[in-house]
Each structure stands twice: as structure tokens, then as C-alpha cells.
Image 1 (tube, rainbow, N blue to C red):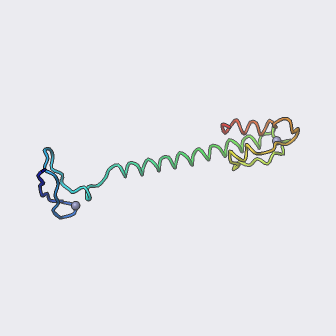
Image 2: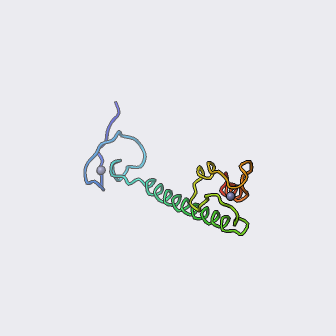
Image 3: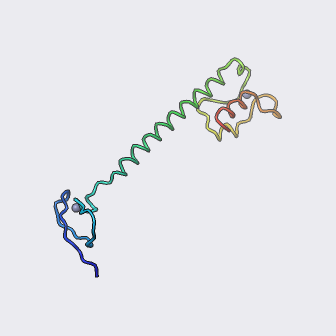
Length: 113
Ligand SMILES: [Zn+2]
Ligand SMILES: [Zn+2]
């Protein structure tokens, strides 16, 4: 049977036991040991959030630029800067039903569809 040692948890101010083993004696028990990874994950997701927001802004600017371009003045596709990928894919293009209108085509290409 493994021996256990009683250790003092500094953060929680209580005694705790753990199997006796060699190596560094922890200052705190596992419950009171701050997990540095949580903070990292948080900042990472914040970064991803910021990146996603930026990508959305870029996308809006991209689409707005195309639909306000003089080349698009005869286009009647219901494209808006906020059109989602699936909306753009389902969208019926204006003009000849057998051809995708150049504006819609350009927008789809611009957002990577
Ligand atoms: Zn503790
Ligand atoms: Zn069109």
C-alpha cells in the first residue's frame, strides 16, 4: 500500500493528503492550484472573437464595395452587405435565369463560395 503524506495547502489554509512520492512538494492542494491554462484559453477565445469580428467587417466591406460599384448598377440581385453565405448561394440572380449575374458571381467569389 502506498504511503500518504499530509501537506499544508497554503491557498486554502488546510491540510491535505496525497500519496507519498518523490519530487517537489506542491504549495497548494489540487483544488486550490490556479490553472494557468484557463486564462490562456480565455485570451485565446477573445482573440478568435476579435478575429471573427474583423473577418465579418472585411466581408461587409468587400460586398458593399462590389454592390455599390458602377459595374453593378444594373444588378437587381437582393444582395446586401449582411447577406450570409447560404443566402448568397440560394439567391436567384437577376437578369437571364440561365446565367449567374456578374455581380452575384463576384460577391460569391469574394467571400470564397
Ligand atoms: Zn486547498
Ligand atoms: Zn444581379
